[in-house]
Length: 195
Image (cartoon, rainbow, N blue to C red; front, side):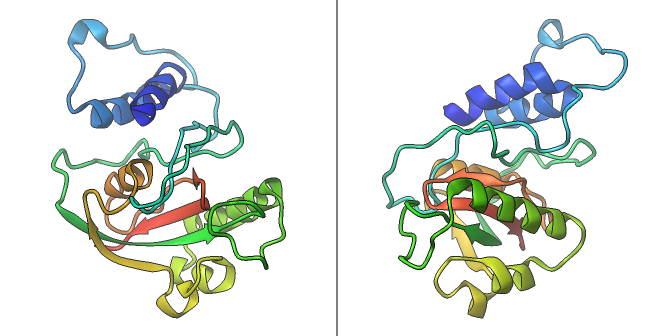
């Protein structure tokens, strides 16, 4: 529900990019009367990935209240990407998790603030979008126990195995695509769909 509300907010601010997210979240295209008139100039004036959403933890078994952040952008489709309307039953993905002191399941060795974690997540995201291998970035940056030996791999998972917001971000990606930064109670995630 929160994802659809935030995608609708992105639609109002983000033009066609937000429209695609709204269509995906709601399961269909709006009627022609509901479609906005094309605007002249730039669509929103925002940098790609500047939309915000409320996200939740990556594990469906974890229970924590989602948080909203104006600083941490979350996953949304790229403007030029063509998304399939069929949702696969299972996908494969990997991610980099950047935690902060006080985030859920953070080890006692994690001493950075949320703001410091966001700066690191932005660097990882920039490098991943620039073509660096997310598996290598997981080795270098991820706070998830065991992530280095797996290259951040989460393996294959289906619907209901991850909490809704993390799942929604992962399942909207095309194979090989990198998500925007997704915030959960566990920290900041940069996700790549692998299959």
